[in-house]
Structures are given as structure tokens and as C-alpha cells.
Length: 448
Ligand code: GTP
Ligand code: MG
Image 1 (tube, protein in one colour):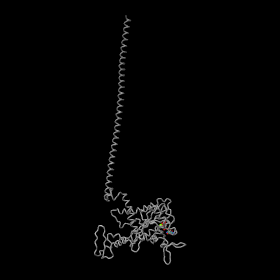
Image 2 (cartoon, rainbow, N blue to C red):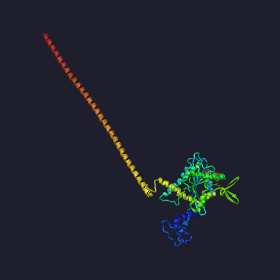
Image 3 (cartoon, rainbow, N blue to C red):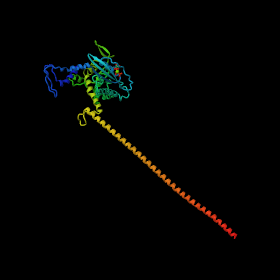
Image 4 (tube, rainbow, N blue to C red):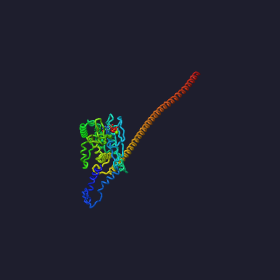
């Protein structure tokens, strides 16, 4: 692993350092763009840069995170144990899970002087539900959550990325059941959902269950189905000349057909990991029996660093870009001129302040409007009251006038009556007097 990494490092540095011949006294310096090339007249020592980098990396340690996606009992735990030649804890899952979950376990491993922090994430209950429509969701969410955690760390004011435990998934081993038919729709849907988020390495699990000729056909069938469904699986890189040949050969062997076992069986005079059957023995590390060694070589010895790099530069970059764009950040303004984060921030701030002001103004106007409305409502009510009062007043006056008129009529009547009464009384009294006179006259007449 390190040698190839070193090779790549040297290649990366070439434009800057120039290509140096092994002989220090005679240094050929390549012209870097925009820089003047100066021949060195003696050994300076910056040719140790790659060694410095390696030393630093080794002392810091490495981390690698594997996600195993596959149905319950397909052989995930066994393969991990076989790959890392150890026994990770882990008990079999029941088939009655209500949904898919992910289980993550981290381990500190050491090989010679290199420390590796390995995280193995397992799906729990994958493929066990009757309705498998949402089975991919928890997996996608898990991967995104790891990206999000890293992004949040990156966006912090006080970042501690050098000591940050990176949990982003570097490789996803997708376990395909050894049916010999074709991919299940669950497999296709899940891989399609994952392919832009993680490096998918499909493997045919328990490949000792398929005959050799069937396996060849099965592999072709799987590959063609992946292609026709547009599923992007991880391709071993062929741009680094030190590993180009082996990687391009191995790309042709995908998906790897693997067998897992931690059982040691005596083969010849050596012990080897194998599965024993009544009719014979399947040796895990025998390339004629399965592709286990190919997988281990490709995943761990040759391309571990590329998997880490791809995770950071492709998948995480995509997540980060989408997330920042979602938040409204852009690299260019509408006229496609460069637009810095600072400017975006200020533009956003101004936009926000403007919006706030607009809202405030809106509220104020609404308030004024409401006050006006209430005012006119009150005025209307007042007017109505006044009108009612006036009406009542008029009614009252009319009534009063009517009563007064009546009173007057009555008064007149009373007066007229009184007058008549007095007149009558007068007449009556006059009548009596006249009667008296008549009597007197009659008396006088009688005396005569
Ligand atoms: P869960 O964690 O419960 O989902 O299962 P798993 O995917 O981790 O499967 P596990 O490794 O526990 O293996 C389940 C059974 O399959 C065990 O009995 C293993 O011995 C057996 N097994 C594992 N790998 C292989 C293999 O390559 N070939 C065959 N034939 N059997 C295997
Ligand atoms: Mg397991």
C-alpha cells in the first residue's frame, strides 16, 4: 500500500519539485508553469518530502470505514472476520426486524507499525420486510449523516480536523445473494440510490453455492444489469501507472465472487481458511476457488487510499456542494462573475435585512390600515347612533307636539265647555229671575 501511495505522492509533487535524477549532483529541473527553473548546484534535501509525509501519516495513523450492505445471513460478518483475519464481535440478526437499521462498530488494528482505526457498519434486517420500498432510506441517511458531521466540523470556527474521527464511509461492500439468476430489484434500487454517495464494490456472497459455469454467467448478467440501470460502481483507478495494470485487470473481474470462513483446515502441510463439505474443501484464499484474495488485494492492499481519496474528493464534495447550494451559497453571481463567501454572506444578510424591513413596513401598514378600519367603523357606529338619537328626538318632538295639539284641543274644548256652562248658568239664573217677575206680575194682575 505505502509503496504505491509513495509513487502517487511523488507524481503529485513532480510539477512542483521537478523530476530529479537519482544522482543529486546532477539535478534536472522541469519548468513549472509561470516559475523560473534554476539548477541546483548541490543537494538541498527537499527530496525527502515524500518520506516526511509518509512518516507523518504513519505516526498519525489511518482510518478506514467499511459499510456492508446485504440481507440477513448473507455472510457479512464472516467476510469481515476473514478479511481482517480476526474475530470481530457480532451476533446473528433475527429475521423479524420491523425495519432496516445500521450498526456501527470501531476497532483499533495494528499491522507492523501502522495503526488503522477500522469502522465496520452493518445493515441490520436488510431484506427482511415484506415491503422493501424504503429499505435503502436508512442507509442513505446514515451516509449523509456522516457527511453532515464532517461538513459541520469543517464549518466550525475552531476546527479540529486533524484529530477528528472521520466516519465517512469509504467503501460499501454490496453483498449479492448467490441466486445465479439476476439482481433483485431491491439490489438495483439500493445501489442506484447509493452510487453517488459512496464507492460501491459489489460482491457475490457465498459464491461456493454456485457452480463455476453458472457463476461466470451470473457475473456477466449482474454487470449488464448494472450498466443498463445506470448504476455507477467503483472502478479501481488506472491513472497511476504503478497499479494501472493490476487495477484494470481486476475491474474485469467485478463483481468479485467471495467465500468467507474463519475455520482453519489442514491443506497439505499448511493450515488454510476453508469451508469443508462432504465432497471437498473450498479454500478461501485459493484463487481457483473464489475471488476472496482479489477482493482483499484490491480493497486493502492496493486501493485503500484511493477509496479514501474518492470519498473525500468525489462523494463528499458532491454532498458539500449540494448542501451549500441548498443553503444559498454560490461561487458566481448571476453574471457568472466570481462571488466570494463573504459577498454571498453580505448579500444574504442584506437580503434578509431588506426582507425584515419589508415585513416590518408591511406590518406597520397593516396596523395603520386596521386602525383606520376600526376608526371608520367606530365613526360609522357613532353616526348611526346620532341618527338614531335624532330620529328618536324627532319622534319625541312629534309626539310632544301631537300631545300639545291634543291638549290644546282639549283645553279649547274645556274652555268652550266652561263658556257654555257659564252661559247656561247665566241663562238659567236669568230664567229664574224672569219666572219670578212673571209670578209677581200675575199676583199684581190678581190683585187687580
Ligand atoms: P447477520 O449479521 O445476521 O445479518 O448475518 P451476516 O450477513 O453477518 O452473516 P454471517 O456472517 O453471520 O453468516 C451467516 C451464515 O452463513 C453462517 O452460518 C456462516 O457460516 C455462513 N456463511 C458465511 N459466509 C459463507 C460463505 O461464503 N459460504 C457459505 N456457504 N456460507 C457462509
Ligand atoms: Mg452479522
